[in-house]
Image (cartoon, rainbow, N blue to C red; front, side):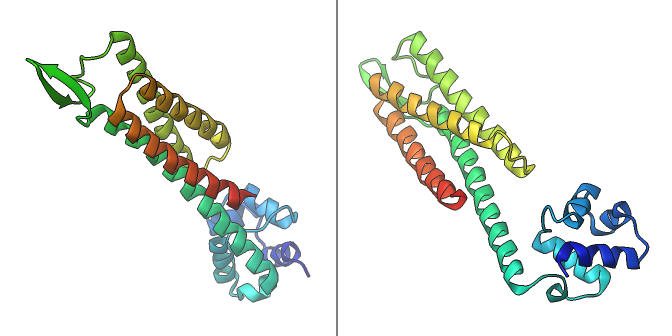
Length: 205
């Protein structure tokens, strides 16, 4: 007997509807419907709840091979979520480019290091572009973190693509305007994002 058949049998033996079982397991009715129609399997945590609720072992519900498959998929999903979260956090680190004293300012013949708020050695147009790119990256990071925490996978790849494009633009922009320290910081952040993205692709592939 397959898992979906066993679950249906256990539910009906208790005289429960799918909605009542869903409430008992703290999941949605759609999830229970999906499991019972063989369109998916519960997570390890949900399997534990089912096992506890019906007083059966997980081995009674699933074969060892299927259980290993579910655990592997869940592990891959967790790693993908972690990569997405870290990608968002790296973009949030762009805030450092606003507050770190990495921009040269000449005052009375002396060169001082100042943050972007006090930077006056470049053109106003450059400053506007810096602010726009940096703030766009920070906002992208915020969105990425929120979507990851809410486990919303839709549009994650699009946001990642947009984030990588912004980082490349920032590296090129700062290099062309000879902002050496800022260019170094944004390049290092970009390298970290590339490593995380390669890890994500490897797991997804």
